[in-house]
Image (cartoon, rainbow, N blue to C red; front, side):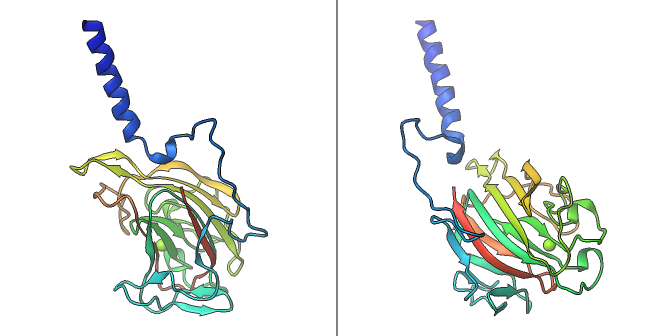
Amino acid sequence: MRIRNLFFALLAVFALHATRLPAAEKSPAPDTEPPKVTPGQNGAPPSDAIVLFDGNDLSKWVNDKGGAADWTVNDGVVTVSGTNQMFTKQAFGDCQLHVEWASPNPPKGKGQARGNSGIYFQSRYEVQVLDSWDNPTYFNGQAGSIYKQYPPLVNACRQPGEWQTYDIIFHAPRFADDGKVLSPARVTLLHNGVLVLDDVKIKGLTHFDKAPTHYVKHNLKEPLRLQNHHSAVRFRNIWIREL
Ligand code: MG
């Protein structure tokens, strides 16, 4: 009888852990056929991607106050302008994101003032965008860093004015009802096809002036934010896949 109780107790523990695993960690059954996806040609989005910016308009985005996004769109490119940030209308959790960006050329300013923008997953966790070509700054603030948390493994930056790619795998954090972190957010980043962040665990909210100290519970899905740091950084071909 005792052994049977122990067996059920263990079963309950396993079941609890299984339900706490993020959905993406659960492999499909081996006899399930994976869905077909048509890959994009020459950097175009794959068939199951949500296109966030296709070069035409900012209809998928809003500004800080929920109004129309107001950065400048020209020749298939959106350029940081004005004073607003940009947020996606749609909220996202676990995802794969593709972004192309270019630093202003000729470059202006030094360090954090040169070609600064950023991609904030869930509006909170910043993957830094910076002109890190011949532009020293603190390592966990250069291009390809998780700002104030992780420097990139290598500096894969191209010269200012040249188009660069970020391909990012993001796993959202999971919280218990009381706000305790069940699993932290995780990020993998390929910068121009080069691995620069390898499944790093986010330590908490991004602060501009210090390392993160804590998380604050939020929804499983939250909007993506592009940072306005008053540099005329250009973006194009932004698409995302929900995982
Ligand atoms: Mg930034």
